[in-house]
Length: 104
Image 1: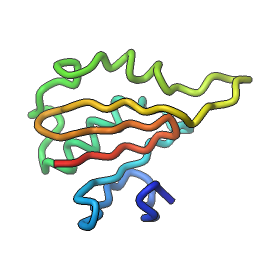
Image 2: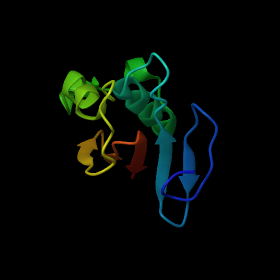
Image 3: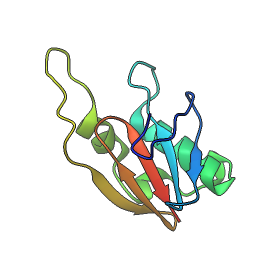
């Protein structure tokens, strides 16, 4: 369940018309990085092929994004804070639990 209260299966983006926002969830147990999940979510929201989009590093350092919220073995994750940025005309918020919110 996301902050929006909407349940979603893996690898999907869900739209909430009341919030006018799209929600995606990064799976920390998979091999893909948070930045890859963000690009996939943006591609789905914009109905674009990721290779046709501006590179993510035009907006944020992907390695820094990945490191910011990456879980570390033996260290309890603090689910506080968030990263907000503008990407390709969208307002994006990334939370430490892996939730990604994209607003037009």
